[in-house]
View 1: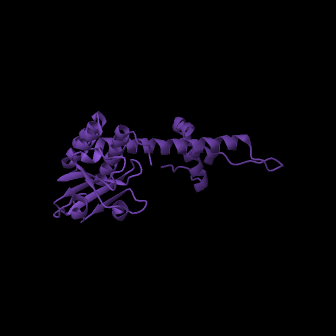
View 2: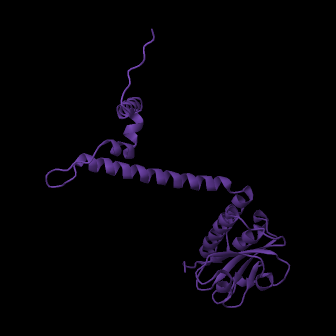
View 3: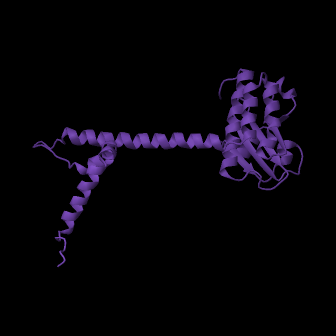
Length: 229
């Protein structure tokens, strides 16, 4: 004669399952402030003051969430560094090794192939205070107001499908990437041009270019002894 297991109310069975899970995962429970706070009901005294245990649990939960967010952010930065191509890494190292303004500009213009570009140039609107620098190869003077016209009043970069004649002095470039350089009172741009269409599309490419532009910005300021604008 077969025997059947005694039946229990669903809520009783669920409670037993939760208890069993807690017994088997005590370490995980202790490390999870949010889960711990869910198991401890809020209690208040006659004056309506929440008990200290509840306060501590909520604080642990918030700290746990903050640590998870910081961990995810650090992981994102690490992944970003891993995704950088060898060419981009070498270009940034060349900027770090530059020993003069001319060498920094040379490294910037030589970096064009690392980003799939055919040419790179440093554009500056005015030569006041940078007269010697503008004689360097790879530096191009542009008309006042060009930087704002290209990237906007507050923009830092733009991916363009035209504008080669304005920024390079010649036509033929079908893809351009321009990044504002904050190197002093003179508005400036780091510009790359490609003869192919849609060369600089994609978030990763744009992020790589932006990172390199910021490195170039710091290298130029260092060798021209200019403060951040």
